[in-house]
Length: 133
Image (cartoon, rainbow, N blue to C red):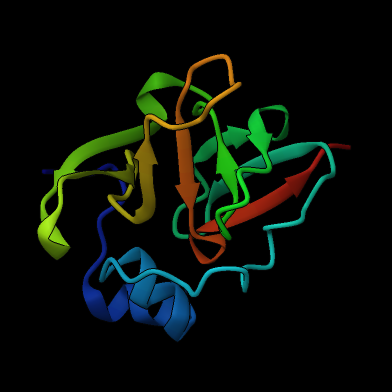
């Protein structure tokens, strides 16, 4: 897949922290309940920490009690890319930034009580919060 923002691994490792690189470029997952944005409740936008692509608005964030920031929909349908993930012996849907291909987390159809029924379970390390002015 060709992305609008394309960098070498060396360029990404210079632009990101070691932990962000592991998540965004290598598909790692931060430990549950450790992310800085888990309890963020101010109005604003959540963007890709790698390229700044706007991904989620604060009004779609909800407490799913899963240990990671959760949203019920992306800011635009084309903001994220959804891919089948068959790692770890299960079938899941991986969520990537559509602009740079960075791994954000996974989406699950268990967002009970939300307008879409979805739970975008995102890594705080893959996101940058931009408070509303």
